[in-house]
Length: 285
Image 1 (cartoon, rainbow, N blue to C red):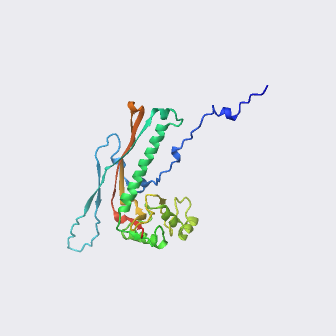
Image 2: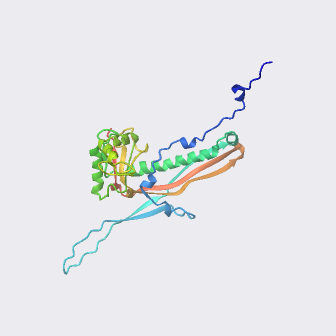
Image 3: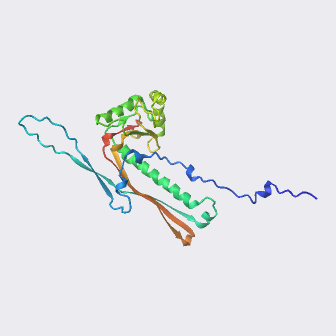
């Protein structure tokens, strides 16, 4: 009588498939720009989220004047500007999952979609702050000699432009660039020298002794095109943002579709406060 062998082929009919969580492996280009500009979210969040505009007053520069004997000093009239952050960016991701799809997948599909939708909305905020706000500054533009190619001279030119406006470089300054421009920046000899001799615990390397956080993001241009922003050097006070509603989920059963329909929505705003406190490096071709 032949032996009956229960082998791998037979066992395959009973072996369950295992799905590894993958949503965390999908990388959005998040560089945390919310932390690199003035964040006023605390003024418009909480139990009562009223209003759609945050007013941020700025004051004109006052000067010290000499007082002469028996002579009055004329009072100065400061120039006050009302900078506003308007909550006018309402973005949402809507999706629908049939019940059978969720039931028959080991990984919780609904939660995975919510997580991924949240990432997409956070990326939208990053893209808006970078492309619409920071890259809108034109006062201190520096033209690259070659597309996506940073040089020490060009970088220091931007530093000099900011110093002209009393920006305390490198304190509270940041540098963001397209992947190609970022690689070009960190390949500079001065950058490499500072990486080797920088202070212990330094968050990032800097150029010529400047310790400025360096970031790479696809929100900056590397495809070329005259005047397209390849990188930006900025001070934190140059712009402001506020997130009135972090990504929030609404869901409802859809009986006719035997499904769950959901939306993930964010409400935010951002504005450029002082464009002279940012310097954009622009492409030339």
